Image 1 (cartoon, rainbow, N blue to C red):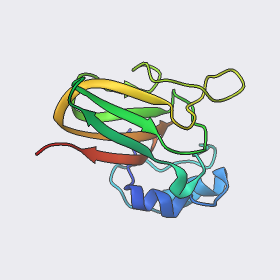
Image 2: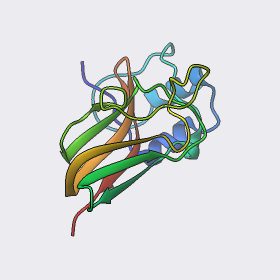
Image 3: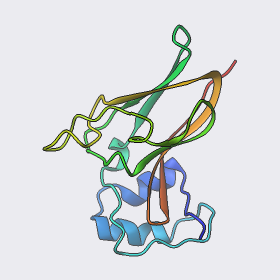
Image 4: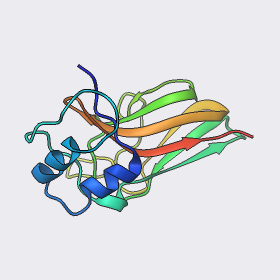
Length: 144
């Protein structure tokens, strides 16, 4: 089954201010490739323009550093790093990203971060993914 991929702009238009069920319905009508249509029972993250990750290359450490720059807490099992120019990709939790939110300190909260070995010419996406629905939060590229 293919995955629905949305641009950051389409995601912000579709998700901002909607309830989780309404957001899933709105996402079904957006273009973005793939052949999967989200169902109303897939709860998508809410927050509109608040959902963002800052990405920087640290040349001293040879790492791509990703920092959550939002106030809406997210499950680390649903947030993924995809792309090229980093040593590994996968879910935030698989990659060892910090979590400090939620009652048990098990949610991605503001200023939580993840550092991946990589090169200065990285090309990555930070996405939310669950049950065949994918929302792109941030796309970032390094290089000369």
